[in-house]
Length: 596
Image (cartoon, rainbow, N blue to C red; front, side, top):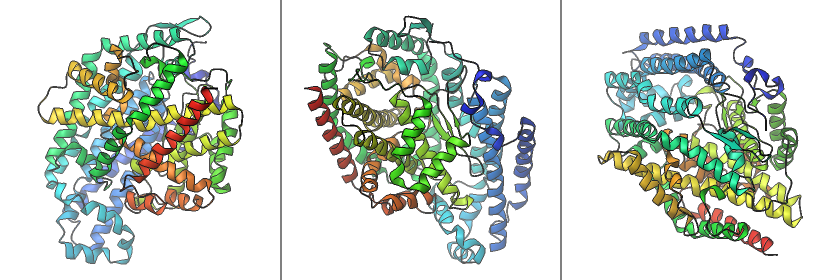
């Protein structure tokens, strides 16, 4: 296996085209200064927002225009940094836009308190005027935050400190993406190379157990060596969440986090309760893994290896594009045409290079392409990653082409449904187009592993996230030892008696970036479950248009209302039960296939 290539060595057609945002770094710097100027000019509206409907409209449009211009600057800076985090120029850009965000947040912080100070009857009259009626839902959402909005001077103070509250996440990112180094490991060919995060994921799928164990031990040795540093960054970040929740008069950080999308806390609680009730299914899957691998105990490094090693599915990126286009065909020609645009117009940064941010994501702004970052490896898991991120990007594309800027985004709660519906369509396509028992077993195993990672694993993360916030709020010091002890216990509860309690896995919390995202991960799990119902409706031929209407809706309504119109009622547990029924059906088929 070759060493990681430099960014300059990546073929252009495998990189995203950031010149569609700004033609050059010089153009970015001009736009950066323009945002700074726009932020300063917002001061002219302070104290005047409630004077009339005209004044309200003027302040709102100036605020939105500044934010819209900033988003382009932000996307360019963070993506050009992510493609090579060792580049000092772009590291500086990334740091500068974080500071600019704090500056803009402070400059716009007057708006919401002044709107909330307008008497309800007066505001209703303002919103009835022609040019403000289209913002009705925008203001409904804003008014829902009235009990949690502070006086203008206090809002400005908190907004000005946003980069301070984000410092722990920045430090974690620098450690995890740039500064941490791992030892050397053996590849399948016996070559000794430095371990990377991308190679780690690949080696965990190796049929060679010694390679899996070596990669696992090598990676975690580095994290354990920095456990106190990672505990410090995560503890500080949690304290920030709890402080802001208390300052804004929420009962908890979780309540504060979900309220922004008008999601009842009961949705979170229903998820964790229902998943816990269905943990025997995960234990059954681990037991099957133990049987097929023929081991005395399943270790953490055994959880990702395909159970059907006879299937050769070394899929190139080019072949993956064709699979994705075919799998998404049930969504209609209009949807597929957007996917083709993504491939043709260089929305995607494909391959791993030295210094590139790990993992995958879809990102962009209202006035940019909905870009995708990958770290491509030739396996089926990466095909799922591609179709997953494409779900996000097409969602963004349809939203931005059907909503005005103020409704041109969508909450994460809805985003994960779009991505995982695509995964469901891919699984169905692979099963429908292949009758070979070995191939079906392979795909079923991949599906079950994906479900394990999306529903079970992300709910495990959500329970850990809830626990560390509660502990910190109650005054418990979140030391490495405290978090590791609880994480080990939680991990064992989820995977059951057939999983060997590897000491190193207790430190997994130290390498999970999503713990810095403020109650984000539970939405992966709810999204997967909701997607099960949607995928079934689409494949039955009567749900594609409703589904695309949901993708086009953006922020034009509350999240639960939008997804209910598409065919899923997430206020009830039924959608979760349906998801577990699908999991059990496919687990049963895999058990049968592997017993022959």
